[in-house]
Image 1 (cartoon, rainbow, N blue to C red):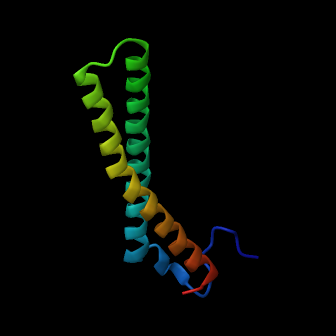
Image 2 (image 1 turned 60 degrees about the horizontal axis):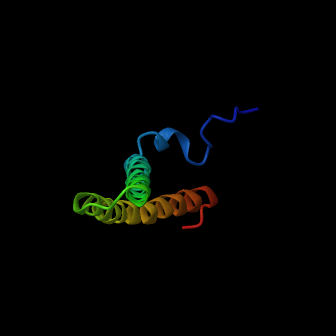
Image 3 (image 1 turned 45 degrees about the vertical axis):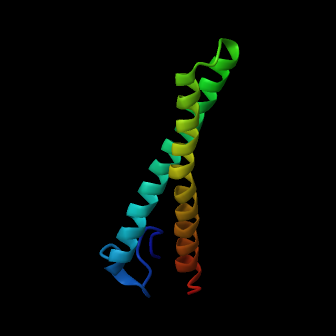
Length: 98
């Protein structure tokens, strides 16, 4: 009986050297990092907003909040889209549904 970690006989050992899977793994790492950075920027904007709400909004604080929201949107939107694409490609590979 074959172990669970053994490659399937149909695909063999060539999956470890597949450039498409390597690129997909690289995109997965980038999307994970992009999502973390994007959500962190939204968190920074939220903290800045509530700090300004508790004290007083200065021009610098408002600029910081708006910059964090814009940068978070620019980083997070493509990261989310590409993460869905990577998951769909993984699902298509798993189900052999290309």
